Amino acid sequence: MATPTVAANAYASLARMMERGGAEKAGQAVAGPSFSALLKDSVGSVLEAGKKSDAQTMAMASGKANVMDVVTAVADTDVAVSTLVSVRDRVIQAYEDIMKMPI
Image (cartoon, rainbow, N blue to C red; front, side, top):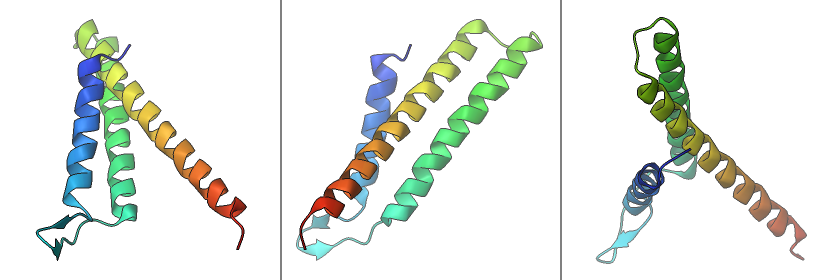
């Protein structure tokens, strides 16, 4: 089970990424990462979490890792995947809403 701290860190990281990109500061447009770059970074971080989880699981199987490390890595991956699925669902819902709009 994911802890509230893990979720809070994930949302804080997302807030920092969003703060850097696209916002106007002092009347001057700030060039930030594009939506595709944000999406690519997010998917990359989910993949990294999955790889870390797999590595911890393999280390546990060979007797080189602690059970708590494996549980923490799996929980981090679960939070990352859940967040990615939620974002995907919201993007699909937004697309469907736009497609339903009259021209």
